[in-house]
Image 1 (cartoon, rainbow over the protein chains, first blue to last red):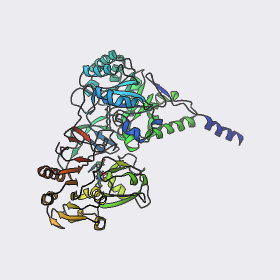
Image 2: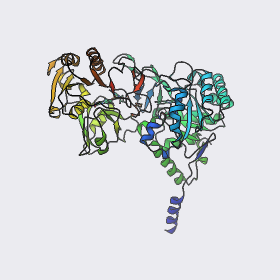
Image 3: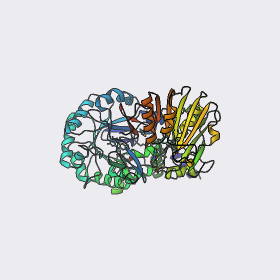
Image 4: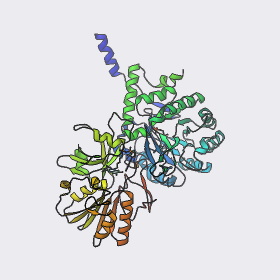
Length: 317
Length: 239
Ligand SMILES: Cc1cc2nc3c(=O)[nH]c(=O)nc-3n(C[C@H](O)[C@H](O)[C@H](O)COP(=O)(O)OP(=O)(O)OC[C@H]3O[C@@H](n4cnc5c(N)ncnc54)[C@H](O)[C@@H]3O)c2cc1C
Ligand SMILES: Cc1cc2nc3c(=O)[nH]c(=O)nc-3n(C[C@H](O)[C@H](O)[C@H](O)COP(=O)(O)O)c2cc1C
Ligand code: FES
């Protein structure tokens, strides 16, 4: 009887530590907002309190403003969605002037997703952000399937990946994550190319290339014809690629793709992810970070674990 | 309401006390369907005193079917009020509603008591689903029309508007894209100010994802945040 009570009290007092170090970026818990769905954070900031989110990866920033693709840009699919936003963004200068000051004050780790059509553009964004206060890391998006030139081309060829990562590496001392495309034959090769070129971490997966046709007007549904599939439908694919990437490299991995529960997040961690990001899941539930954070805490308590260290990649051992 | 449509009344005091005509809510899907996006619906009625909102739903696909099948007393999660609504209509304004476009315009009609005219149009009589009693408002003249003549005048919204627009200070419209395109063209020709409420597929509903854009003279704008109501001369509807 007393023993039972003791155990209960112990469980209560015992507060697991969810913090992780992602490539030199210290996070209070392993849950980040994925680049894109969260925009530049202002809108969701009005809506949910940020206390359970560790950080935000802002939407892709290019050197000059990009207009984005023609609508329709999104469509729901079974347990997921297609998007072809086309990386609409205000460009580096406007980002620094308008968005960065607001982001600095939101009390979150801030990772900037960098996009470009050429190597010089990628390097230019990294260089332009170099002196800015309040940025904790960069995520190099060499994997967006929604733009016609560049983008994914860098992410599907190991030699090009190496070149673009090296070019950005020269411009920045910030922790550098490289975001890989799932639209490749061997994710391990791409992950290793990024690591060898100086990446501090690997981030994956971006969306899977896809499309839909509207049979009523006999035309592609998306304005851009092709888009990227995200959401729970891609979760098993993402998990496998995180597993393979984690096996291929020594640097930490940020896992994402279809996470909507704490159990999903745990699966990514057990496959080898240091931290996770949530995108489409936020649309279903703007409070998802809280759900995942409390779920992780509960799991660690149940397992009697003090932190997430022992769980990282445990399913592979 | 007729088959294929339903009216949902929701206790949502916070939203009911804030919402303006033309604004909308994102309705989240029931928890048994955790992998579906929320659906946007215009506010049809808002009773701030009793904290009650009403939406009109046309059953089109899986999401609207799920909502229609919810029984009385069930719980739905809402986000709102969202977007920018209509400016107040000056006396003598014309409101053009095509099909379910009636929802925000009935709310707009109710929000003022100056003289105003509602052109309520649809393809056929069964699609004019708004209960007559809800539109029985002082100072509101209603003209109904159907493309096939099964009720009211035989003709389109554009036909009707062309006959009514002379002398009107402003036009407010919501309905299918082709109708809005015609309304815009007529209003520009007559030099009458017009506001159009647009629809686009949405994910976040709050302006973060830039998924729901419409082309305007200033580039792409977000229907959920910069709209859904736009000045007619700003939007490029075939873009
Ligand atoms: C601002 C705004 C106000 C609206 N107000 C009303 C209203 O008052 N009454 C009403 O009946 N309908 C309204 N709609 C349309 C309504 O949102 C769609 O009919 C509904 O989302 C269809 O969902 P579904 O699952 O039944 O159809 P499906 O075709 O299965 O939906 C698939 C996906 O496409 C989206 N979608 C399909 N049609 C539309 C559309 N026309 N507009 C936006 N997204 C769409 C859905 O949200 C969903 O993500 C409004 C739309 C917008 C943008
Ligand atoms: C609407 C939308 C916009 C996105 N924009 C970007 C972007 O700007 N840069 C990027 O690297 N990834 C972008 N992504 C991809 C996500 O960051 C993420 O990799 C992918 O959606 C898989 O995660 P999820 O299933 O949790 O959404 C976008 C995804 C969505 C749905
Ligand atoms: S739905 Fe996300 S910006 Fe409008």
